[in-house]
Amino acid sequence: MNRDPAVTRAFSYASVERFADWVKFQDAKAGGIAAIVGLAAGDLLNHVGNARAASIFPAFMFWLALVAAVATAVAVVRVWWPRTQTKGEANLYFWGQVASLSEVTYKNAVKAADVEFIDNAVSSQAWELATIVAVKTGRVKLATGAVSALVILWVGARALLG
Image (cartoon, one colour):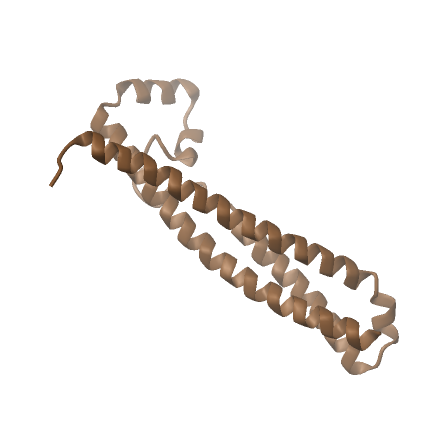
């Protein structure tokens, strides 16, 4: 077993980078879903008059599709909503913690930190990012399900409205 601190340090930094990329990847997925919601909602809003004049079932499908668009938009916003407080121990590597400090306090804390403290902060940040990725992944799955329902309802409503 390797006890070289450089190996642990490299692993922690690589984990932070990898998990940060996964956070960005989940946000990008949500962006694609948001684009679909925008197209669907725009098209649906252009046909409100047709829905008002339609019989019950096509009108119901139309309004259900519009509700699905709003629900999907809410799901996307929940993916993008940042967490600003650490779940674990406070550390100098988590942006929410750093932002809560004054510039002078932060600089002094960094100067006073030893190598072990910084290594712990970096590995804690990797853990924080992993928990954020887990939450975002669950929320992206929900948004993906919502946008799938939206597309089905949108296509059905548009087909029924003519």
